Image (cartoon, rainbow, N blue to C red):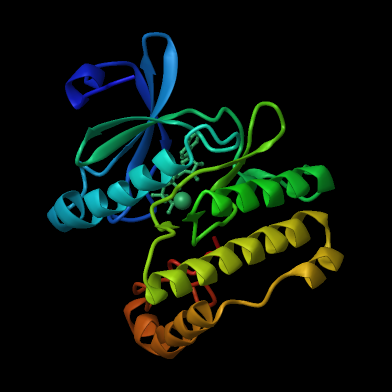
Length: 233
Ligand SMILES: Nc1ncnc2c1ncn2[C@@H]1O[C@H](COP(=O)(O)OP(=O)(O)OP(=O)(O)O)[C@@H](O)[C@H]1O
Ligand SMILES: [Mg+2]
């Protein structure tokens, strides 16, 4: 399927997900000839995102989706509309973010573990797998989306190191999701946070006082209200 921006302009569409901030793509569900297609688009974002960050992330996604083509559990990349947008196969099912404990079985997480293993074997590490990026497909099996932070395996020691650390982060993310939905016992299986992620986490904590200053609530906010942007993903 080859699609261009011109071809989808004016087709029936509804927003599927509004980006959390100005650096994020808008995600729309577009009806193309009776078929629902997901369009991830940064064209409406500020210039640095529209011309640099967004296309760079979409390039990463395309490389990952191409390597994963045909792997059950990963939606198909249908088309690169232009530098600013891609079209993806629609997964008609909820993200884990809107499901509750008890909604998913141990079998689901065993399948998810297998899917992540297969993804790594194809040379793709996701790098930021969280409950918004894992969906329960219409057949009840897991699907993974959002490869904007992914890394593909390649040559060179640094890439090798990064790839291994990101694979470990993916396995840890699955173990944490399993624990979240099935109970704390499952957490014992969680691999440790990779060293590079620990360093990033530490840096984030050191910078937190600076961010706090910026996050000061607007005048008139009742005392005790949580600062903006502190909600967990
Ligand atoms: N192919 C798809 N089928 C169904 N839903 C999708 C698909 N791709 C993305 N979504 C939905 O849109 C949401 C956002 O997509 P994605 O994670 O790719 O964008 P993002 O810019 O990284 O957003 P965020 O950082 O807020 O997660 C996903 O959490 C998922 O709910
Ligand atoms: Mg995402």
